[in-house]
Length: 182
Image (cartoon, rainbow, N blue to C red):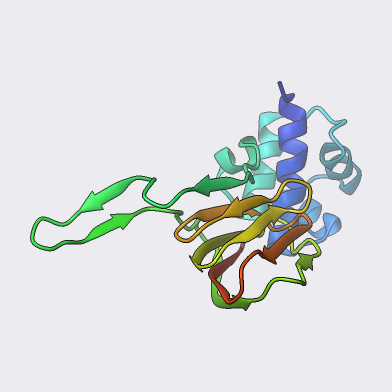
């Protein structure tokens, strides 16, 4: 089980980077010593509740976000799976694949790919997530150490702040890519 100070340390680093602030600036805004914040981010400090609240105010985040571990996990939804809502007056189903966290930015791409050359991507910015749906063909997709074979209609999400891969397994493979940055 992860220790609370480890979760707090990871949360402080994550949220400070997300805000684009230096260690010195967050410490100044929170009214604490830069060395104290440095220790907390290293997971070696013992913060008081007041210090944590001051840091949350300085980072403009709710207290709960600092206490929640980052959940960037890979998720695969096969065609026809997932929470589904059906319309009463039409032959129409909506399957929820992913929700957007507050303050996130999403870019949508159509990927047109061929077998023979894989796309190995370096890690993107901290907290980035990619979502892919295969529209045509088959592909090997996901984290470079554990990619998943996807077929038409399959969905995957994975933390894009880790090295990841897309390899077409059939000619003219098409996919929808949604890139999410926090």
